[in-house]
Length: 417
Length: 179
Image (tube, rainbow over all chains, first blue to last red; front, side):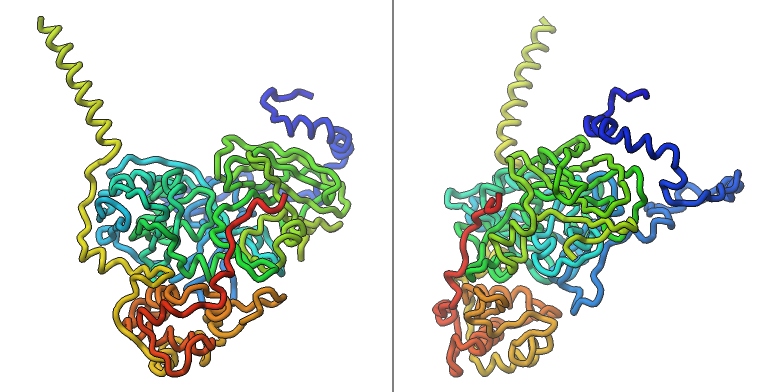
């Protein structure tokens, strides 16, 4: 057997561990993949016998018509869709970047249709010079690009976790390359007064949504972004301007940003009191729960998929609001033993990280699960570990491991349901 | 001689360039100053003490009429909830197996109720209510929760004086709490 010197460690371990099983499968490939011999396609298919569509026939390209089912996961039967969310189809995606059209949505007053020529950003409050900036002004500041995930804090709740697919369970997370100006640069342009402790950001949507951001985050890695994955923000993601707070809960990353009020105190707005606070068993509610803790999910194989005995690459995504993913461990035996998955480089801070582990399924029912460890040493907990401390009513910040049950038939289902 | 002059010029330009870069790192001179009038027109933030509550007032009775016209379709005739969140009830439920989070049971500050209604409600026509109407409907919702009497008329001072039952119900983030 020849071995590629570039083989990652996990692949090498698999080759050793799985050698016996793999050898057993070689003789019986047709049976092992469960499919009868299929007819080969025509030697010269129709699409080779005539020229295809003209160059420029699509001036803004869209996916193949055969990918028409890879779409946002929009919940059915909601009471209203003005303040609601749709999810990224995580199980259909590869890599770590979410296509802009599939980025998850959470809006509180619908999606505004903003003319950037009429849009302004006002900076006022505890500043030396209150400012008004146009979008052209904002793009004149020195720019930066960074890859970061964004995740809704309720992804999912702690009760009735009955979703079928990876998207149903944790599809309120996406990842993109964001381009904009450091929030610190813009605040320093206005000049912060010494009493400045918080910045209250307001959106230009019909909710005029407001969240308070601690000044330390504003002066650290916070960005005002106007582009996502190389093109201008989509309206669903805050066109023409949004806040991006790497690792902080999605709601704080105010979209359609129009105002920054520099203050000594938080606003205690509805979104940081009545909503987006975490109810504890003793009746108190945790407030200003900003960081999204380390989390991971296997996206393949995952719920509603069906696998056959034999080789499978287990793959998924991991992320942490506290920094880089240090490792991801995967169990293929319901938690009895854990193996180290390979991490796809680059492993970036506060970004999705792709992990992979080669696996041979022996056809016996089992449960697959992943758990992430971040650079602070924090280990992704189980749901029971979380609810033992927080009860069932805290709703936000459930970063528990997700079990996928594999039946003898190969059907993959939600291990919580 | 010509060469030496060119070197001196280059050195001078370099110094000017560095000084320019240092200044630019602090201020870029981008944008224009916002006027007091512009800030006053844009800034609708009401803090928890109610220090920026606007002039105006509204009674529970007036608020009942505003609520029926503007709010009841989503929040129910008496704020019991529907398409919109429940606004009434739930006192004493927060530590139970079925916590009911409403304005009465959960909302910590009365002035931020004014802030939210003014900026975001009604959902179909936000920022359409007058200050008097927002005071009135705030009074009605607080009255439904037993927090102000039937005859109450609320303005900046009296709304800020309402002490909400769950004012001290919020705690800081202790995470990481599960290891």
